[in-house]
Image (cartoon, rainbow, N blue to C red; front, side):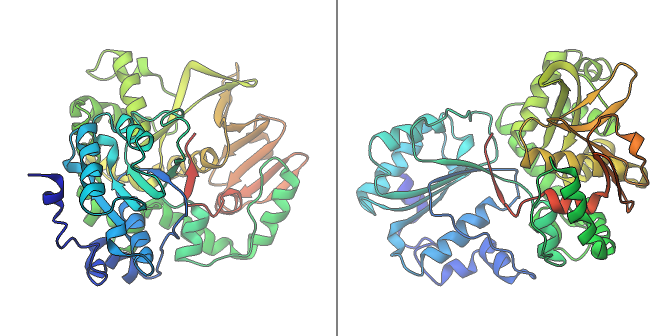
Length: 434
């Protein structure tokens, strides 16, 4: 059976302008309250990001807007789960160009990154002219085969669709504040902006605790009850499906992530994880940590020494979203987030927000054992969550993040963590691939 036959081109959903509104992704986006639809970008895109973040919904709502002005046959959407390798990908495009639309239009290829040699296939299609005068969107949940030099010279902007950051989350589900995004390098300026947001501290802190439990995924925020009850299996199975497609061992994966949960917020090494589990090999641990980063499950922070990164030192590892922490904890330990874990989860949220906005984010510690949670150039960030003192920050310049304390002393400022996260975050949904 040809790919064209599999796609049922005689009556696919995207050709009928009415049927698109019956698509589950589109219906969910249009019926959500408050409605959150990412506006289409008029450029060729490779959209990476975690499972269930909304990549498919973005593609289909973009198609919905295109159908207002374009002929349906000019638009191709294909979920690449049924494609095995680059030959299948090339065959799909060859048949589409031969039988449906010879040139131009809009092509959407969803979850392409598990097609074997997909990047080689895309490069061939670009070079052979299949994408001439065409706007192309491709998505994937794994950056395992993606390097910065992938598809060299091709007009394809590589971006990451992360769960909503705290600013976008607050603007969407609470109140949009009139506050510009600030750079952390001018401590006094950030402090002055923070003072202006103090009237909103109660609502910001309330939202922060909601974010701790629901995270930045749209699906988790649209359910009325605790999302861990209704969506745990969905998110867990999505992760394990990716793991299986890559031929990795679930037992090893589960042990490593269980150890990350146990030591959350603490420095840890691959050797420690290997010795304290049945895995034994630090190289295996390193391989699975790298894989988990490329599947957008977690983020690894390394020690900064001066202006250099010490790749051999202990690491700090956090999940990229607090809801992922809850899913992984239930999966590995059988429990849910505890009150005592909230400060560590918030610490991870701070690190994630910094890493999205700035290059080279890490942590540091000194010979006397004193640690600074996060470092961005010469700026230190210490997350205390409760109260905080200026001496808590073991650097000359930076921030002590608290529950509601605020103050300034020289080049150090105490700022409530909810205000800090709101101020430093942009209004981006898409971030450049680094």
